[in-house]
Image (tube, rainbow, N blue to C red; front, side, top):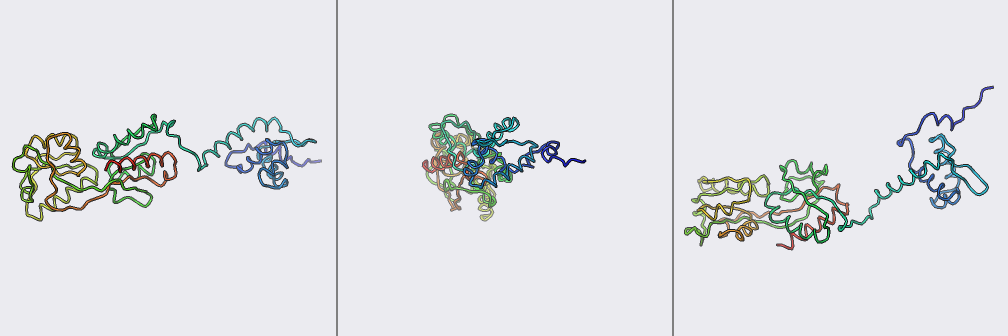
Length: 321
């Protein structure tokens, strides 16, 4: 006479994989294993005892094992269930911790390295002060700066290759958040030894002078050259350029020892004035100001470590201006 197939034995021949298993069944398993009673497990899970029994039946079919055996005092685990229990409980704990939104970031213990896309000027004027403040509360935390072309910045933020971008990124998409750091305008610097220009700089002086032209990759800074080109065209002149420089470092020394004129952001000019004998003049024509902001992707919006660092960054930069 043919025997009916044993559903548990049949299931044992097809080993379960994680995508096949409803994770809620593992929560039921953990509760029953912990309490040793279906009723107590049901109370913990806010389920009926019959729903717990049905869940166990489904998990038995998945695993090909009885998992629990009824006794007068409740249920006891099979050897397979005992072996499985540690993995299940540890796994559920890891998932629970990973999914929590109420975790607290501990700066004093963090060894994170935040990657910040920033031009050389931003590094010179901001990063040192931020690092000094951060170090007081997070001595193990680090900062790494990079300088990507603007078209690559949004994708780098989206992928997590960088955590933040500093600048004036007008073309960024809706997936980015930003907080304003400073408003910036442009000024001119000349050497203190420039007898012709050290006291005043007229529009004609500006148009007739030989210039050092600062041409960085950063759109927020290089836009000045678009404005200057338009200014010279308007007056039928062509800017005479002795040096076109991609980097800000060393330019104040060059100007201080020459008769050249250099147009740079006002905060950079103030930094130069602390290093070399130069004079700062306002632009002889009014040009539009622009905002420098801190940008990040929505993927990092709720991360506690990210929130802590960006709040510090904004706080420090704003306090310095």
